Image (cartoon, rainbow, N blue to C red; front, side):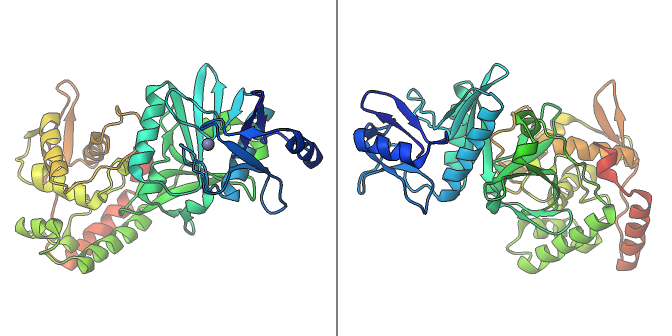
Amino acid sequence: MLTAKTKSGNLICLGLDYKKETLLELRKKEEFLCPVCGESVMLKLGEQRIFHFAHKQGETCSLGLEGETVRHLEGKRQLYQWLIRQRIPSVLEYYDREIQQRPDVMFQYKGKKYALEYQCSTIPEKDFIKRTNCYLKHAYVPLWIVSSDHLKLGQGHFATLSSFNYLFLRNTTSGDLFIPAYCPENQLFHLVSSITPYSIKNSFASHSIFPLKNINLDGLLEPQLIDNQLVLSQWFKNLERTKFMLSVHANAKSSPFLSEIYRHYLNLFLLPPEIGLPVPHALNIQTPPLIWQTYLFIDIIKYKQLGDIITLEELNTHFYRRVNRKEIILRHLPQIKETETPLKPLLEYLHILVWLDILGFNKSSNAFYLKQQMVIPETNRQYEVRRIDFYNKYRCILKYHK
Ligand SMILES: [Zn+2]
């Protein structure tokens, strides 16, 4: 840790630039105490690690503050100094005794108090959510920043994101979603945005890099993000791969999804090209779009007659029945407001179907209705023809619907 109290109650914060001689002098005449548990701590002034305080060996602090890596110490120190340089009132390792939380940095900005957490180690999802909710309940805006070495960004517009990565997802006031990451070695922020998953872990995404010295707090909270140019032909390529992976990793017995589509006389490789489309909020659902859109087809669209209406209530009932059976898994996004309901990607998808002329939408009754049945290809040849025709016609569905 980087802060300690002296016996007389003064706070020593190593986030500020102290000279080593000053600290050596201080160490001679002062005793340092942990601001959380009150036990005495040592001031470490070695060459290997950055200057820090540590509990004596064998002693554990009530908040479990030990075991910090150099990366974590360095990262939070840099972020703290970055805020101070912008004259933003900030406290490093601020301990809120009432809620027994100690964010890496607490700062006040535009009338709100923020709890910045720079996370270098993986923590269990339930702990992450519990801490986030605790901050929210006590009027803090949580700002979780993941260490950049937890991100796996592929070539081009690809990213492999774990459920841990998704916990860091936040939104700008205009509703853009992004994951902020920080690298202390190169002093760079990495922002991952326009995330459109096609499987549980793999997604199309944009990756922006901002040097710490060129960006201010507003630039981090409300970043200017690159819009992902999702090319539909690339999307289809990955969709085909997802289908292939589904078919090799599960036989009909072990996969309720596969056995269900066979029961409805469908073939995974002969689904109409209107099923498995990218939608802007697809990430709200962990289950791949191919699967939840197929369920939506089976549950609602397939058995409608032309002109039949699809109500929101119907959508809700079928969707949550699948969720309750764990056939559709929602993603935990603790920093996103609950008003961003899981139904959002479903509605986005239905509006794409309206655009594709499969459905109609009646504004006055706020209901969809069937305009045209989706044509289900019967042979591989038919499938290929429909698919090529489809994406020659609609190149950038996602962009069109943003
Ligand atoms: Zn302690």
